[in-house]
Amino acid sequence: MDQQTPTTARLTAIVFVAAVVAVVITVIVASVVMNTSLGPKVAIPGPLAVQHALLTNDCANCHSADMDSTKGVLHGIVNSELSLRDSGRCLDCHDLGEHALQSHAMSPAAIEERTQRIIDHPALSAIASASGFNPPHSKEGEFACAVCHVEHGGRWNDLTAMTDAQCQSCHSIQFDSFHKGHPEFDSYPYRRRLRIAFDHASHIYNYFPAGEQGQAPASCTDCHHTDATGKFMMTASFAQGCAQCHDNDVHASQRSAGSGVQFFTLPAIDTIAIDDAGIGIGQWPADSGIAEGEITPFMRLMLGGDPTLRSDLRIADSLDLHDLQDATDEQLVAVGRIIWAIKALAWELARDGHAALLWRTTVAVGADTEVTLSSHLAGGLSRPLMRESIEAWLPDLEDELARHAAGDDPSTDALEDASFDEVDASGQEWASQGGWYRDDMAFALRYRPAGHGDAFLRAWADLAATWPTPGGPVLHALKKPDAVGQCFRCHSVDQTSHGSMKVNWRARQPQDTISGLTRFNHAPHLPLLDDDGCLQCHAIETQPRDFELAYAQFDPNVFNSAIAPMSQTDCAACHTPTKVAMNCLGCHNYHSERPMTRLRTGAPLKPSAAPEKTDANPGDDLLLPLTPGGDSP
Picture 1 (cartoon, rainbow, N blue to C red):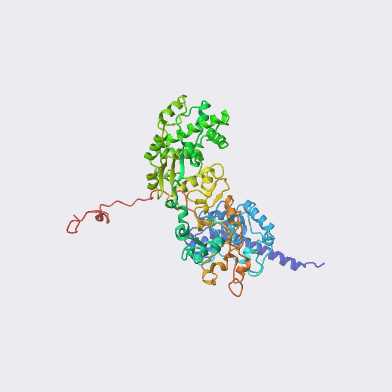
Picture 2: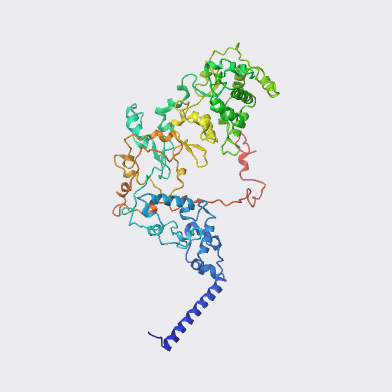
């Protein structure tokens, strides 16, 4: 075994002592320098990027450590915890959501769910698990912003640049390039059903060829165009892309007489059975049985704020209100309560108008429901029409309600002598282009939509979407195939994670894609398309795929796309090392949500220093009248 000679040992000791002395001297010199005005200038390794240039004069804008100390100079080397603290300074300006410092700014639960889904997918399992490379992070799994975004690299340093090696360093299996080794796509880009239920296959292969010459679109760009950025393909409006064929389906003037939406009605009631049971309901037109009207969905929603009435309405659903001969005493009593509730609702609407309607709907959907109640719910219903209708159908209503409130129910009066055998033809003609009219044959107030995008139908659909039970009575009624307005032949309804519903009134918008790890820019690809145009990438399925069945339920993730998914080889045909190279950030975002600029709170309402008042304002003379000669007086 070799042994050091005394000379070698002495030399080693001298070198060690010299190294220690050098370190001590370096620390002392650094401390002295850092406590002078030259300290920060010496410590800065390079200029900040242009985006942060205004922060140069104060290191504390970005660094949590005291830059006038040795610890501040060495913070990026000796203490990774300081980098995480510095990331908090980044988030003062850049909003990345609740889990900003987690991988991809996603919650741990979302990361776990996504990872498991990838593991379970045979084509994607290769990139699922983490590799041995592990950047500094906290015990909660948070990574410092500086792991990827490195400052002091010069004025034109690209802070968002990342190499493929950086992206792949956290995955166990790497691949050479997009062209060689990239996993196959998973149902890209169709992750959910279309918000507007437009079946491309049936329209392109069936309806368009059978349409009149010049009526159907001739190319995809007749209905789709890029947004201002060129990234997203937008869908044309109803007026631009659909009205030529479907305007008659929704416009009121094309509907037959009596086709308006029944908003309020006196439903058909077996008044004989009610009277035989000794239940007094006062006046109720016997002729209501001719039309056999029902309690409208709008009335159900407004009555639904009372728990007792909700129970009574469920009882009534099991009965034929027009024939109550076999109803039990309990059921008849429930029907009696419903009749009085309808009368009270009619009087409130006639007396208080829109205020009563808004109060009723607010109580029904719950005070904590996030919905904007507006005048659209009333649809411009006028006081004269409501009061004249009630006075014609129930002439003694006010007196009857007073007696009922005092516990003295008037006996049942079927108004046998009253005549309700005429239809208000002039009223229907008056509302031919949309609006309210009275239907005395059905004892109903009807509303005709004014066409596509009718504010009344839209407001009630949005309100009904917040109903405690999925969809609510109004939404289910409007979804019927023969519903007036035909809104839900095209507009889908999604059930949210909170259990409420969301009506998709518009096709996908750019703001609907603020999250996600995959991105695509259409603009540079459009000039490269061949004679097939968009069909070069988006192939239409020619076989029936039960497209419409996806819209009979409320889960947007359950669907049958009429457009075939794209494959990785479709893109790799062009994106090769010899044609168009592709790096990871060409198609992928690191952050699952777009970074947003955070507005600092506490901004004053008034300026800190008001401008000084002067005797004359240069613009005051512009406010003075001119004399006939053109000069100011």
